[in-house]
Length: 268
Image 1: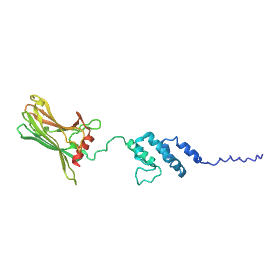
Image 2: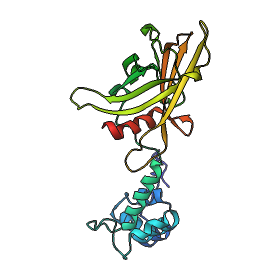
Image 3: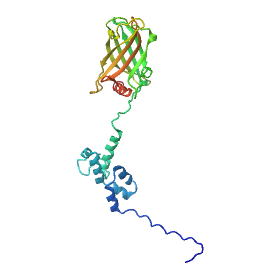
Image 4: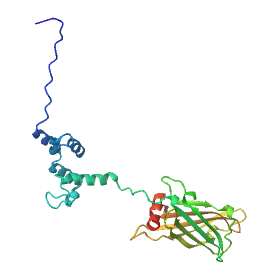
């Protein structure tokens, strides 16, 4: 053996050999959907092994059995024009994407800045005592988790007196405004407010009276929504200090997004 200071070369590693075709097919039966999808991107041969339709059919029957009913004929695909070799993989992807999105509704296409609230208040004798129009985004929307569709407009500077009487009348109209769009409107409420609900008010004493009225259902149905208007007054003359506007469902205020989704049925 020579000992001339030369370093012996390490043995060369054996060249990598991909697993045989048979092994791929055996392993594929034990993989989940994510692993199958990743493995099918390795090479052409792996794609053929891990995209086999029977593998994805097994996953469809396991996770989304009703999806298989969309393929009434063996070898057919979801889309008649779809010629992919694995129609069950397309089915699995379709149902998995739907499940991943959950049941959350899309964001409303209408914003608070697109809506103006116009309110008219009439005394018992029919005289208009208060009228105002305010952008919904400036109407003091009440902040809560997610935001609720309830607004409070301070009108103390208007010196509006509701006056005595059995009922006051209130009309609340929501109007869509904006440059380049045709205006649209919906009457949210046109009802009588029972003045006695405010109670017997003395000087400086505050009270409130309110009214609710069912809202028209959007389209062919929907929940039983109600519009609510609350009039805050003070003193014997019933000076109007604040007007609150809101939309209720089953005695709770709906969220801002729910309220806007309702309005867009009529305003867009």
